[in-house]
Length: 365
Image 1: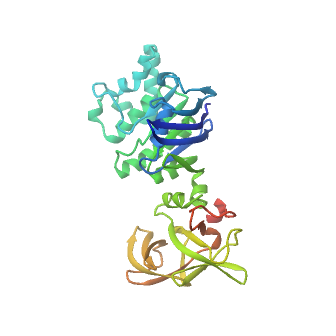
Image 2: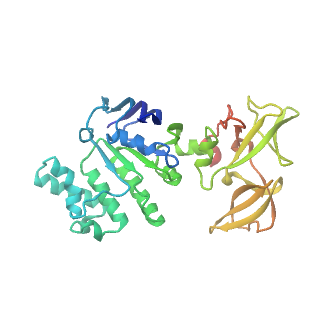
Image 3: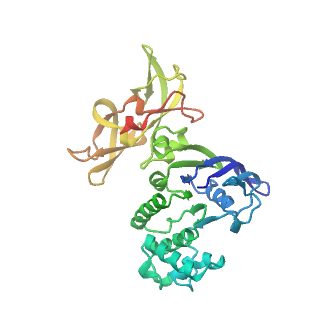
């Protein structure tokens, strides 16, 4: 099994630096997802691992071998692209076999390898078709098959599902996860879709402006974001952000906002008058009397659940709530509470999470 190490990786285009000293250690067999908004440097980082972009600084190691000056074809990595990159004049079998033919493998090995991969990906009955005769999902499976058949040390995925419709994306996510579980190969996957990141990753790397903001398991980042950027980026709908001021009443901290308040867990950096940003997940809110009041602007019914879009002091606020037993309606005033240990508190100036907060995964179950 193969690990990948990025040690201070930098990318510059002339005087413009777009990736700033990336530090990342991908364990053998791990599925790591790089996620962030467009232009954050995630695809550039992936292309440096593949050898398609020159590394401006730092060291890239694959399987304990420094790869900075190694040609892409000699890195033993396989990349699956957003646009499939299939050869339109070749049928499915020949597209899958292309890399093996370049290696001058025997006809017998090529045939058996193509048959094996086609069986894994459900492509056996399409082997004689050309890419133009396939659906988007089938083309993406062919692209994955071409990567798998080489048995590379590392799989690299560059937003492979972004051209598919919502239903196909869901299906292909499941196929990629099953495939990884079956092959156990080291995989690095780039996406701007936080749902893909949450469902696929062993660990997520959240990037912004060429920097890593936080690395952790999906639930660790969901429950314990390091800053307001991570908190706002992960989650659908995203975490609500409320500007507040700390008050100390009888030694117990509370957050005051828009004439209302919530109790806070005791934290070392909380002090009277401190400006904070409260992070409130829509899933963790409990509706009921005696809490914070919000005005309901819109209700999106999603079957067993509803997204309640409300206004809190003029700012948008979203609550995810079960429709079983009823839900607030448009124009209602609803009240909510939230357990202090599920409330995230960020510094009002820096946006960094205050020290002393940690919610175990089981506590939010």
